[in-house]
Image 1 (cartoon, one colour):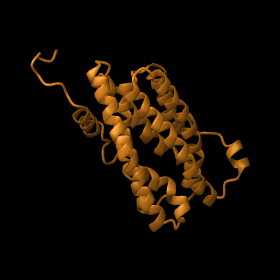
Image 2 (cartoon, helix red, strand yellow):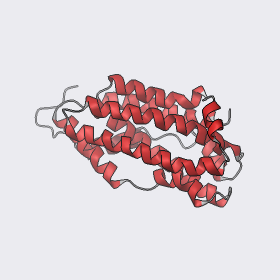
Image 3 (tube, one colour):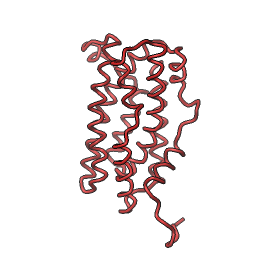
Length: 225
């Protein structure tokens, strides 16, 4: 149904808040993180996590760079994806501490065979990078990052309380668990630009976000397959 002519345009803050709320996963959607929180998951799950995340980060960084190029004529949107791509490079540096604590060698990394369920998420991000409206991808990713950040905060505590990992190994999880005000500001600017120019379609963004959340849960579930 068309919006009445005198109805106020939605703000980016309202659109993003609605997406985070509407797309939040059910409390029991993630089967692994509660086990980690209780110290019941096997320690080798972190080895698999590090190996899989190495693949995820490399793929997502390329996807974000491509989205930035596609949004070249829309600076607020391009800036958001440029910031994300730089963040992936930092995340890869933080991941090294976890990989080292798990005893992973370069040969382990090179010979590892990624699990399809863990790689569904970056594969879908790559699909969005190719064909989705970049401003809508901002909305979908923002909702997913809210869930991901919560999971990382839980795991960061558990790696200290139950698994005795050093701070260098926990750094990857704390990196994503901590608030990122610059990214939040860029997301609002990108979405507002999309709304103001008529490029953003929140309904489509929610469809993307639901699949992202489903693939997020698939990632965690697949770590113990």
